Image 1 (cartoon, rainbow, N blue to C red):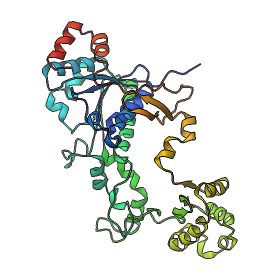
Image 2: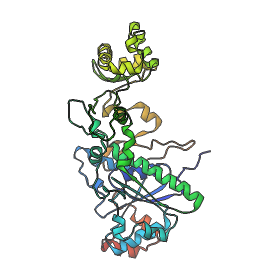
Image 3: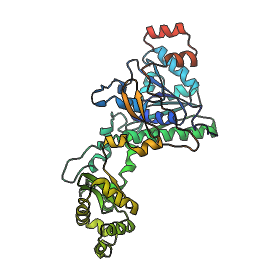
Image 4: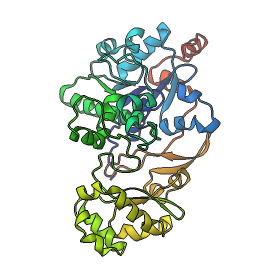
Length: 403
């Protein structure tokens, strides 16, 4: 017997834009919640991005299984409709600059009066308090401000942008967690609350290895006096081998974080002399001699093709992985077998590898993926059927550019 989806029966008003807000609500939708995506009449900024280079494709990824409505919050009637929706909803989520909803007259204090059970969730770059609260934020600016960029790249190169939008998505994951935690508390108290997540806060813990090296240096507030960027080696200089090695047809990542890994690797390489060599018998010693260790492992790796070496090392439980490209990951048989990825013929974006939530719940069937909807596609269903607005008034609202 199939279990109810964990968030079945929960209605979420999604005012999110770009990545972090929409990802949080995407996770809620995949967990069974009803997501009503509320956009300005021209659509949220991600929908407006050009298709050149696939810049608009993320919209399809993050907005599957959502009902799409348009609403002009700059109009009095538009704000009244949002308040009416909030009366019936469980969650309202936004990731505007802090204070924007308050300036519009539809902030938390207004919404909680019409629905004390409502949870209002806010994602932003720096949070609603502190001296940075009004700074505009995008993923790359948070990478810079957080220090993440300072530890990315090679020692002899400049600070480098992280490829994935980790700050945005880390915030989205935490925002999901904050909402679900608040829903759990509401079950006990009957009351909603306001929750928030700042991108700068959310990314801090990911710097753990680099911070470990910094604090181990004994420097508490002064300038960093050692190379922060460690390339492909361990950020905390605590492990070796721990790098990406060139093979005959590409690259492979190999790392040994403990003696068991190292002994297994030396045996596979046919280097029993290294197993008993006192220079390499602890992780600390190997890390100190990382250049020599990398040379040994690199010379061994260069003898093989990427997938061949992966097949040799993996059965011995040596942590390693081929460095794969986007074509390989979107066609990955493992992700497709698990149902994480599924090929979809999107009506607007063509054939894409659509993704489900990484969260899995016992006995819940995989949620059927539905393509992201056209702008305002569910106006009648949400405003007419759910709110009870008549067809005549809907036509008036449309002509007055409220919806």
